[in-house]
Length: 325
Ligand SMILES: Nc1ncnc2c1ncn2[C@@H]1O[C@H](COP(=O)(O)OP(=O)(O)O)[C@@H](O)[C@H]1O
Ligand code: SF4
Ligand SMILES: [Mg+2]
Image (cartoon, rainbow, N blue to C red):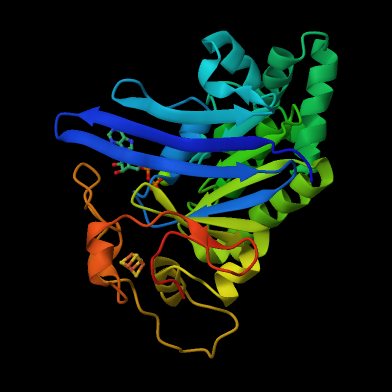
């Protein structure tokens, strides 16, 4: 079996705010193989972005702090890297794209220049000419029509979907081993969303890039990911190959999420049921299972003890639940 590309062990990332300590990521453990596509899903505020930012070492400090755990990337401990080493790793070995490309693109430089600069920052031996050619090549790869000419355009001259393609071009320009995409298509309309996801999937296969796809939308992971981590209140509550998440979900929260999204394999008009209630306050999480207050299967034990991730007896499927499906 191939060695892991990324190993996150018992990660805790907390925010120290006036309102108290927000336990945004609380004891999270998972791994990714080279080339693997992993979906990270869960309702807003459950710790998806903070998990990703922790891996990139981009958590704002203060108020945020990684207070415990290990993050190993290619066998190297990311938590021990200096700022210089991190700058080197980011962009060349792991890169991240965000929901809103406008916040990441610089409005005063052409998109070609911005891709070329990323290449030059990480490849000292590359000439201006070579890096510009790489920029055009990348724009072509992400299917920007007339890439040679469009490389000279500025971010505001592109549509939302095209800007997200530019971000993907920047993120992949140095051929990273890991791409983290944080809600990359949430701001786009459905048709463009599908095109951008299809493109990312194709490129990751072509280059063997591992992709961590963060989304609140289970529908997005169905077509794009091999494995899925379901997060709830700062914890991973279920992890499994994507087919099992959809066919035999084990955790009541995963079941709740599935019942709240439209499914192509169901009769049209089947009723969607949103999960009642709210996730717990992360400054004061409950002692037992974090899902207890909303769970239709709750028992006494659930309110006293927190369930750890454990096998549910179906291959690689694990869930943090005393009474899994
Ligand atoms: N800079 C911050 N200061 C305080 N709390 C934060 C900060 N960033 C995130 N959080 C909190 O951490 C928790 C997880 O956030 P996040 O990872 O962004 O959720 P999501 O799953 O929607 O990406 C939330 O409760 C959020 O309010
Ligand atoms: S441990 Fe109990 S409360 Fe938590 S998800 Fe399982 S059944 Fe529900
Ligand atoms: Mg987020």
